[in-house]
Image 1 (cartoon, each protein chain N blue to C red):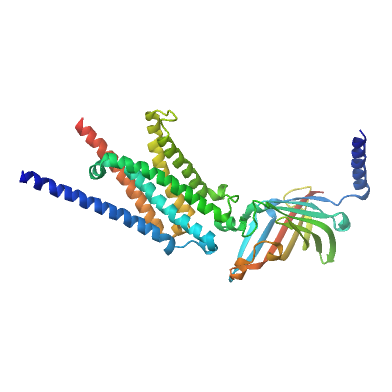
Image 2: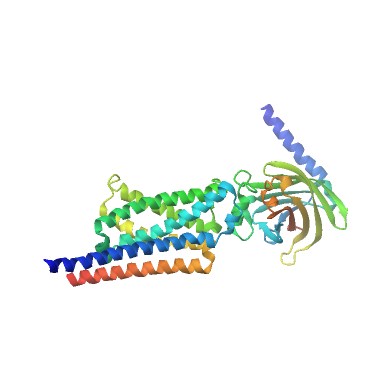
Amino acid sequence: MSTTITSQSPSEFRLAIYRVVLAAAFLLVLSVFLAIPSYYQTTTLWYKTGMDRAMLLAAHYLGLVGLILLYLQVILSARGYFLDRLIGPVKLLRWHRLNGIALLVLAASHILLVLVPEGLANLPLGKKFWPEMVGGALFIIIILLVGSSYFRQAIRLPYNIWKIFHRPAGYLAMLLVTVHVLFVSESFEQTIPRVLLLTLFILIVVWIISMKFMGEHTAGNSS
Amino acid sequence: MKTLMTSILTLLLITSSSLVFGAARSWEVDKAHSAIYFSVDHIFSKTRGHFNEFDIEVNFDPAQLDQSSFVFTIEVDSIDTNITKRDKHLLSADFFESSKFPQITFASTKITDAGNGMFDVAGTLTVKGKKYDLTLPLKLVGVTEHPAKKGTEVAGFDGTIVIDRLAHGVGTGKFYDMGVVGKEVEVLVTLEVLSNK
């Protein structure tokens, strides 16, 4: 009896430590990215005053929270053995769904807060505003991803078709948000923010690929 | 029927009068070699830009100045200062408010010979829906056969004018008061216009 207790307790304790470390890592990454608009202020902000300035600043912060949550969304959806064991598949799915809603709200708020100070009739359309238009395309993809997930049954979308679209669109969203941030934001023209973002992006891509490889490897062994 | 007859007669009258009096020579703008540049102070330096899309109707003959005319139509959305975010800001209500006022126009009303190849082009400048009297001094740089296009003559015009943007409603003065953006905008018009010989 006592042997059983001593063999389970360190495992549970280790899992708890991992959870704390993961949460701390997430908060650290979020904090580092949220510090970027203050350390690397955009010149656009120099020419905004009063409410316009507050709205644009809020848009920057909400956009960055959205960026990190979108990266997190891809990590949650890729799951992997480690996250499955640490958090559990049910909780992961719940977080994934809630995070999707949060992303939609953040993206919509970000767009509104960016556009209102410049005038809603003064939309950044055309070739020279391609990074902004990438952001627009990303917003449409987020709407489709969240909408098709929440209303899949209502619109009678077969699960297999939904799945074929959902996962690649999620990866595309991750790519688009990276391109959007890298090219739309003056803050990310600076070396450190640029390197930070690209490093995070590459780490997640490598992690997803390794998860896929490990998953197939495990599946291959089990069969 | 009466209205139709009146319209036809009016049209005939206009056509015949232009034949009798003779309209000044019509020129076509060579857009690849014509530009409308501007320059404005930013704290200490000069910020330069130009408009990529514009149309200019030129009817000009130094011997028939009363028949000559210039009509400039500038598409505000085509403003280009080499920084897209600055362009977007210039298009906003802080400056041009291009969604409401997409064009700037200048239509000449009278051209006078100022000597030494200079011509004073007086006319009406329309910015943000309001009309202002303006005289654009244009120098006729020269008229010659186009070296690369036989049977065509090319004429060159250069003109520089300083416009007080605040007096023309471009900005409220907020950025001027902050000491960031100057109020005097130097506008350089440089044209090559073509006409068959």
